Amino acid sequence: MMFMIEKFPTKEHLKKKQDYKDIPMAGKITNAGSSLLNKTGSWRAFRPIHDKAKCINCMICYSFCPEEAIIVEDGKVVGVNLDYCKGCGICAKECPVKAFSMKEESEFGKE
Image 1 (cartoon, one colour):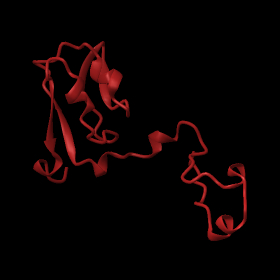
Image 2 (spheres, one colour; image 1 turned 180 degrees about the vertical axis):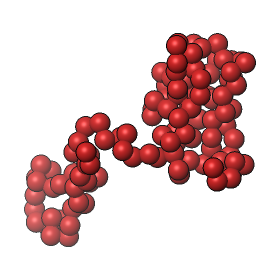
Image 3 (cartoon, one colour; image 1 turned 135 degrees about the horizontal axis):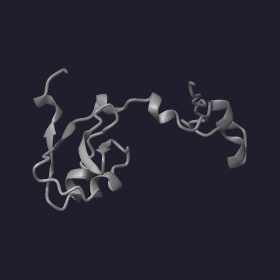
């Protein structure tokens, strides 16, 4: 299933006096659940590194991750789905035991 993105307002739209309801929404995703089709990890500048030895599996990282990129198996954090992680660093910021650190993506080269 693919999603459609509506076009930005054109010059013609802007010339006419219109109500906000008449102007098309910019970048609107029209199909629910389409985020799985859009892997966004390729433009990440920083990569989270998970230290399993420090992790207490409190799931705070999982709760805060805006992309649900934290991989959990049997109630334990086991890694990060780098296809969807944007490298925002919230996991590292919120982890109470500093089980996540952020490294520049350039350190890893092309994988």
